[in-house]
View 1: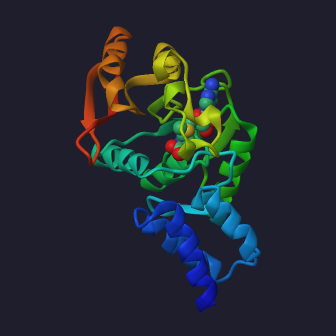
View 2: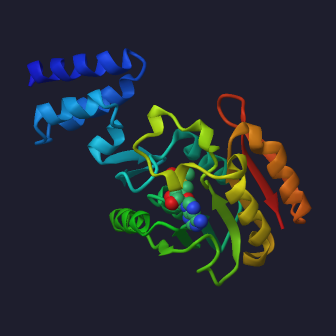
Length: 252
Ligand SMILES: C[S@@+](CC[C@H](N)C(=O)[O-])C[C@H]1O[C@@H](n2cnc3c(N)ncnc32)[C@H](O)[C@@H]1O
């Protein structure tokens, strides 16, 4: 075991240097009980195959999420979105997570608001099937279903949360190679999904309800404008831990 650990470490350092030891530590811990042949593991490391997909699960906020190539790898920025919503001390009775992927936002939010009805939708059937598995594991009551944004949604909500695809296609890079394109990229400089969601959202929101977005810092100003144009009030943007505007919200 000690020798194979050293071989894994060396192959990891050849690819990532010392810049990403958190991933290496997760991998070594998982390796203790894994039965994948070492040759296959080294091959995956050399291809920069994400450690999260190798392990097949990843921690997010207070949960642990099954993931595969059908869903986005949950990001720390999105954990901060959950923190922000928690800090608003809202009391929503029903909550919608648009573009739920692994279900990580919806499931963690349902733990914060245990009395609320939480719905998570995604266009990808395979993402929804992963979200449903995570739902069972967390013993939660989130309703997961397939929908192209609001197409299969027929009720109103007090809180909508969305981390939609928002990267312009030019931002494609090697690090994103294995994640689903549907989860990452949007036309119109990454604004396409925001525009569609903002245009339709009010129809699915109760009076005095809230909508929260995660986005690129460069998209913050346009998003605020779009929300105001659609009649949302109290719109504002919030910085991430790196001091970049990463979240925007508004109220009906
Ligand atoms: C950035 S990922 C977010 C996944 C997850 N909520 C998270 O934060 O880790 C965006 C998600 O939106 C979904 N999506 C893309 N286009 C969609 C559409 N037209 N309708 C519904 N979901 C869509 C993708 O399948 C993907 O799961």
